Length: 215
Image 1: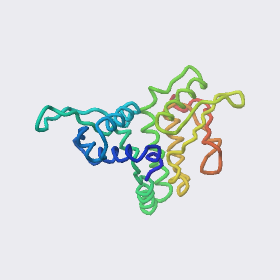
Image 2 (image 1 turned 60 degrees about the vertical axis):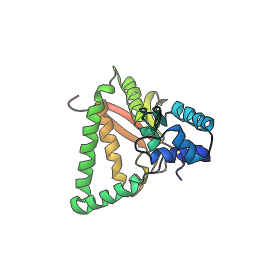
Image 3 (image 1 turned 180 degrees about the horizontal axis):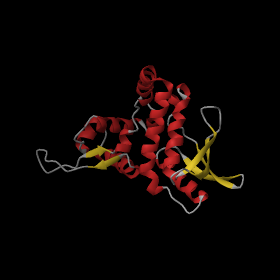
Image 4 (image 1 turned 135 degrees about the vertical axis):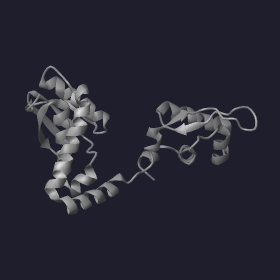
């Protein structure tokens, strides 16, 4: 069971699993039968899960009588269930290292970071480095880095507390090149990596430098 699912009680977990297996959604009646509880109990669970953003209402479908409302997992709800991306991605990187070598992989990561960062550039802009750092921190936070702008040493720096590539970065520290390329392309500034979680730091911490060439 994933850590995310441990926050729910047994009935709520079973309801979520039932919806996961119901591509077209499930009615209250179907959920009652699956959980072995009353309609009121199911509706209470659904109300809480909808409010939290894990479940949504779908289209009502005809079922022997009047149409019944169907309930489905949201994308956020599906992400509650474990997916071993790291194992697969590490395997892909290992193959790439074998075929393209370290320099080829590093160039690929840098290019990918620049490409994706450039698409975020319109959301990361400011009149000065401090304002840009705050906008970039907000963008990283939206991507799951748990990032924020902090005032340190007389300037605004970015601290990220969730390394989204943590497992990968332990095996391949070069993955950090993606982060740096992404941030430089998104902000238009050179970025200095001051502290790294994978290397024992309390956070991944970054400082914006001068404007990058061409910006």
